[in-house]
Length: 294
Image (cartoon, rainbow, N blue to C red; front, side, top):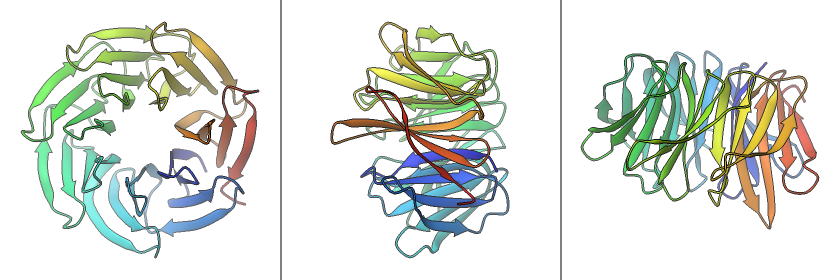
């Protein structure tokens, strides 16, 4: 069972994963123990997101529903009946944004379960989403090979970012909100200027589609995971590939970065039911791995 999405809890003590086995699992970062399993989806779970307070998890199943889980009780708070690929929380945690198969981006109220906005403009399904740090903008990546930047207040499309030659599978805002990273099935990572929509850099090096991108907490680096079974660490300013992690057996489907107590770690979700935890900046070794059938 492939793991399609991984995310750290806000305090970095837990990892949530979504996979082909139709569940969301919570893992203890320090022991590797499975803390909880959330069941209810009828298809593989392709996207998971933690609320900023760490009390809720949103998950989406491919072509199916979005579910909102209470971490303390394990109960499903809300079910959003939309055909969906991906989901993300707003910085305040009061809204979730959903990327739909029908080419729309939808904004929903977490408490009421009501749809507040419906953003249209893409011509294919939405593969990836991210809120800006201030929560005033949303970026979406689509099967139509473009990114779009949306104004949360008005619903207007601020920019369309064109340049990729294939699906945009992952998007991420920098911590300052001035840059966007995108990873594409065209095997490249691109850095975009939010204000001008210009492409600042294109990072080449992967031999397979780029499934996931994430900025470091200080915004100086980007990590990308690829179908070529590698994870690369890039310098944002120079474009230099500073670290290459070879997974050997599985594609890197999803990656998340944590920085706690001076230790930088990556969690990587891959094929064969594996979730790996890697330490950066020292020996770059794999600290531990969690397997879905453990």
